[in-house]
Image 1: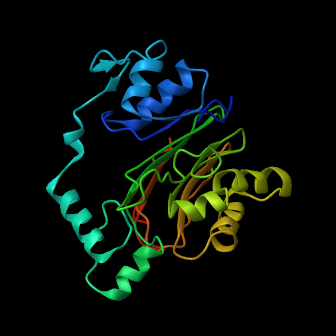
Image 2: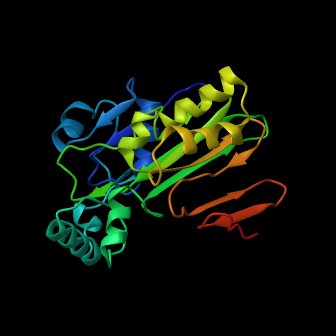
Length: 248
């Protein structure tokens, strides 16, 4: 999403595109629509006039066979989830005990979603988010990542990308709510993000990264941990996983 123009694009149900964000950007730039829920027939029969799907790398969109995404680890993870009759976040390691499993059911995972927020020297903001979703979810379930205003949002004030339990993030409209707190209540980026994490979403469900037009950065979460990093043009970098654990 481009914060300056509020132009945005989103896709879901992608099975052969290697990098979904590249396709979402093409959707934003080349079609009159915002959110496209993919199916092979729909893509090829109705969108060829907009998107050139006939080549393997049209306009930077690399496609692969769907088997590319099927790994022994994913097969084992799905098997374990089915045997336990649970839904779990993608890329989460097998749960060794009941307590950890309960945490996972609440969306408590440090990995699974890849998000990015950015601001340039003129204060223009942008954000993008991609996710592997949930393992053993109901067919047709769509999370917060492609929902503009929930897991992904940018305007002239801030850019936000969220991770965690999609249903909680959608209910709280995390991205738009954070921006609204800054716009209408005059909260700083950090104050708005802290309010969202502590007051608007249940514990152990949500994390986010956000940047303001002034270059302020915040990365709060109410889960056990969240992989995160930031870098500024003056050379400052920060990387962390657990609370209060940045390392320069």
